[in-house]
Image (tube, rainbow, N blue to C red; front, side, top):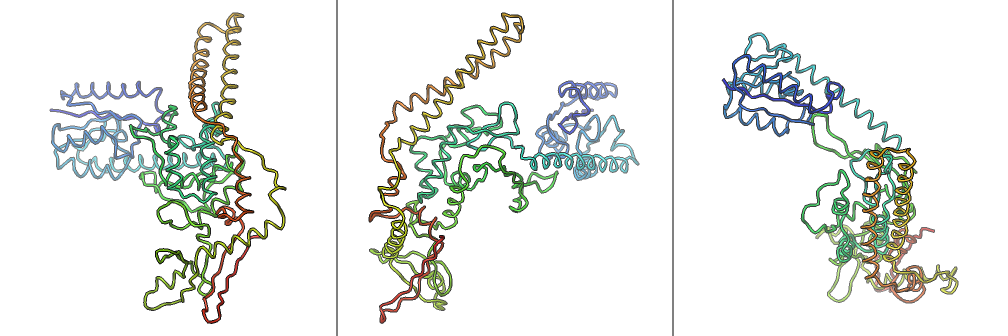
Amino acid sequence: MLCAIYVRLSKEDEDKRQSESESIQNQKALLVSYAAEHGWDVYRVYCDEDYSGADSLRPDFNRMIAAAREQRFQIVLCKSQSRFTRDMELVEKYLHGLFPIWGIRFIAVADNADTGVKGNKKARQINGLVNEWYLEDLSENVRMVFDLKRREGQYIGGFPVYGYRKHPMDKNKLVVDPEAAGVVRQIFQWSLEGRGMQEIARMLNGLGVANPTRYKAERGWAGSRPAGNGPGLWSKTTVWRILRNEMYTGVMVQGRRRKVSYKSRVLIDVPPDQWYRVEGTHEAVICRETFDAVQQGLKLRSRSDGTGEAHPLSGLVRCMDCGGTMSKCSNGKTAYLRCKLYADSGKEKRCTRHSIRLDRLIELVQRRIRFYIGSYYTLGELDVGPERNSRRAALEQEQKHLAAQAEKRALALKNLYLDKVSGILSAEQFLDLGESFLEEKRRLEERLARIGGELAGTEDTGRPSDLAERARRLLHPEAIPRDLVVLLVEKIEIGEKYPDAGRQEIKITWRF
């Protein structure tokens, strides 16, 4: 008679083991000996390590079930019923449902569970309930520990948010990653300028910037998902997630999704008022004012015409009568805004057109903004100087930081050697510590070499700063920057046009 041996161990059983390999080997030895004593031949030993007893997707467990379905053996042998499963549903499905149909006998040595013994079923069911209650209590205890850490502002994610890295001495704390943080700042700046997410993704790909997944994988950070052989390109979804992530303001935000239950892998979204938010847990990459301005812009931005860039007043213009938004349309040469309710209501015409030429409305708003700003400033009064290439400046800043770190590693190696000569450290301790410092020093030098190569191909133009350019655009007759419109204008209401009277009311509600 053939028997299949199944062994399993997971983190839920840590209090029952000295080491995984030893405990697995002990299970195997016990069951192989038991099979020999009863004259059964072992068909195969199936083993799952680091899998919960409630997990129905265990690889070897499912291989064994597939072989049982094909009736390749007659007995399933486990140390205990909990090794087979802690899920009462699986107990009923296999032990009392499919196994008898397939002609499979289940035996658990430690708790005397045996489907071949009449009158043993109730004991197996009680055992199954106890095992499931144990797993439920364990899951609840783990959840309480995680919730406590979330309330305290400790980071419990598997790998850090792009723009940060885990603190080398405290895995529950985040520190800024200079290179990735520079990319994040650039993404927010582009969004402030009114660039759409698709356009930002194209610009990053054009600069050859690796997306977050590839960036982490290239550095071998633990927990990062494999990047595969793809090009590591950015997408508008990735850009959107970064722009919406409050973590960049120094606020620890966790608990945005949760499992339906301890028996399910399905995650559901949690309402924002139930998130765990702790301020000041880590250094901010983006200031709160910039973050809020970007959120306002995202809320107002409408779908573009495929260019990836919304028009400066997009999302701000409303119908004065119905309060609805104004949609953009064109006669082939000129762009107009008209009441969206009027356009969408078909023959009912639940509102009127409220049509206005987009270029004339933009010019009107531009004149009003220029008037208000001009009341306070002139271009000569603005203290704006030349600004260097932002990408080059970010690289030089990172180069300076990494060079200082490399120098510290070299000094640490020197001190280690002196400690070894002085007899403070043993040769073995010196080798262990020295290897770690050398590896870190090598990584820093590799990154410094890459930065040097990038700087060699990046021209320091010394061009005027973005602020000076924006001030010039503001105070001279050119297109106004969208980020300034969003900051100053709350809404623009358009009344119906009366051609006979030559009048159309336009009301601008300001934020100041």
